[in-house]
Length: 449
Ligand SMILES: Nc1nc2c(ncn2[C@@H]2O[C@H](COP(=O)(O)OP(=O)(O)OP(=O)(O)O)[C@@H](O)[C@H]2O)c(=O)[nH]1
Ligand SMILES: [Mg+2]
Image 1 (cartoon, rainbow, N blue to C red):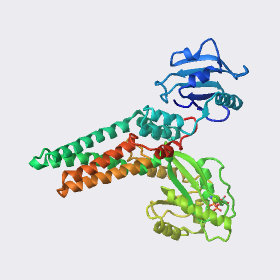
Image 2: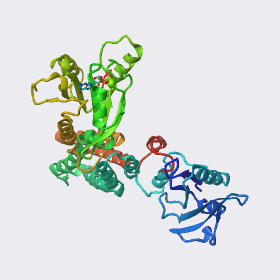
Image 3: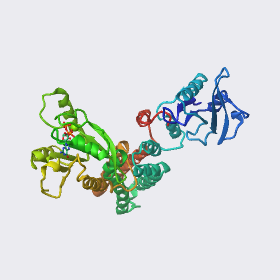
Image 4: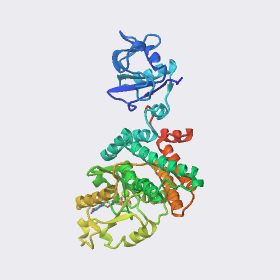
């Protein structure tokens, strides 16, 4: 018998309507104790909505509400589910939740509703993870990908490959049974071709991982440079609001700031950082150390040069950045051209005035091109870190199997690796799981999901 769990399903704070959700074998009985209307919820059919009053044990009316009823197994969790929609006042929904707790429900843990849906077979792990991704989507593109995953497109493809590997392992093992008689049932080249088919698909997913991350969390752009070059001014201009403090005192930005911008629909996270210099100020030094960690996370660096100090003033900084963070794309910006009047040296530089908005459109275009290039790889599947790790292991197993075939190893050896890959595909979809894996996945959800 499952415990009845309760949580707010809508965001905390004031809202037009708040939804409190109950799930568990006793959810309908618990709700009925506090619902006053013409009907008896315990006798109601599934998928109905009723209007009535939410009352406490002592008969005190808390609010006028509607109650939706979903009977197991036709609910989100697969259990009996009740959703109470009340007015969105904090006092009201808290009172409703507390009343349910007094009547035997307990507060749900983060992701517990979805975890139950998984345990009751309503979703597999890939779909459950898609639920979290869908809620956390920062772009329409990633929302769409999560939606497809939730519908099972990824699951179906993975299952198809698993079936193929099971057949391959079966054939290999069948031949093993007759090995005394020296019969060959199968063409090894055919087996290789089939394994490669799965292998290639996995490789595409692995290659797309970086792009997946960008769609999932945004294309990271950090603005860096020496103090006073106008980084915070550029940050504000890009956001079109006064977000960062700007002053003519070097070392104004100590910590770092981050904000989302959209480059023609692609989410990008822009970072304003502390100016880089050898500093004796301990707080500023910490800010500069932070710059290192931001650069490491970034997909692109905007290096801002104060052109008024000379067009080449930041060239050594760029050299250092290239040698320390080799793979990062860097765009050099010559700032303050309103007072310096310099000439462009090459295509990779952009002349701007952060303060007066000169050259910003051209800069945004460049940023879009770069962001677009980095996500255009993604076909339709966004994979996360857990999935990446498992897919990588599966790829290694398949590679081992292919090597064994090339080295004319016994079928036994080949099938061991194929079986390992099959088991990991099971972990990917959640056919095989343990408590620890579930905790690490569902603890990232919000409460009430
Ligand atoms: N003329 C001119 N002045 C600018 C421009 N951009 C920034 N400034 C000025 O340069 C000074 C420093 O600007 P900030 O944006 O605070 O520079 P920063 O790089 O963030 O400085 P730190 O945070 O101290 O590293 C301010 O007085 C700005 O008004 C520009 O395009 N033209
Ligand atoms: Mg600043």
